[in-house]
Image (cartoon, rainbow, N blue to C red; front, side):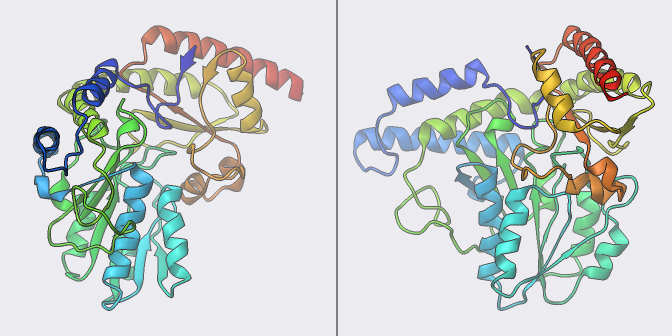
Length: 376
């Protein structure tokens, strides 16, 4: 098997799983209980929170544990907009965003909120001048991902922050799900940041919303004591500690791993450029972990299934996207429906070996030639 769909989900690191299992077995108490077992669990919870805060260079009071990035995105967007709607009902985002960002924005439009989409330049980055022109006195939220899930486009968060500094009533939400563990992130520029463990070799079902202390939210889940007033529910101690372990294993090696993945990326890109019918959608602003491309006159699903028959696994779009074929992210970049209807995504990891890439390229070529012969 050659797995090249790491942007969809990553395999669980054995140390992370071992940590989860140990906490499940050794810490049976609810960390909100007052008895000795509860106190023991609370001490471990606090330790994990402090460790996560240190790794991410944030304050431990800024951490809200969630079930994953989708909940974090929903809590950030709905929470801010419902809490501050007296200031205004204008929101700005991009067509590069994950469905868990677009979904709550669509919901808010039914409540009278107005959403504008900032343009994407040819290099894949947000058009800062267009963003500046969209900003209004009643703009209360700008939601732009650090790295998008389909093309891997890295956005200039610091420059976006500088624009928002002129609008003190507006908050910046950044979906960091595809960035965490792959590139360095400066959380000091961000008011709200979403993270999920299963993108960094952690377990599914645990994530975080980093929320600056000055920001208030309307909770999605009410009732019951937890780790924060903004998200009720019994603290999932084993998952929290497993998230700490996943971050502990990935954060220190971000730059070293990136250099390795970049070598693999360049090898694949150079090979794809040899095919006349392939258009590479990734730009120089795409991170090394993501390669997006389109094959003319071959349905992406056909190519994907042909690779899967050889136990090679890539994807057409984000795993959470709707089943229709066009990629909104690729269209926002290319303005070409043909390219947007035929995009495929390879996503790499520091776990990917050079031998796997060599074998993948061999299989890719065989499938490409066979489908081209069938088409002709």
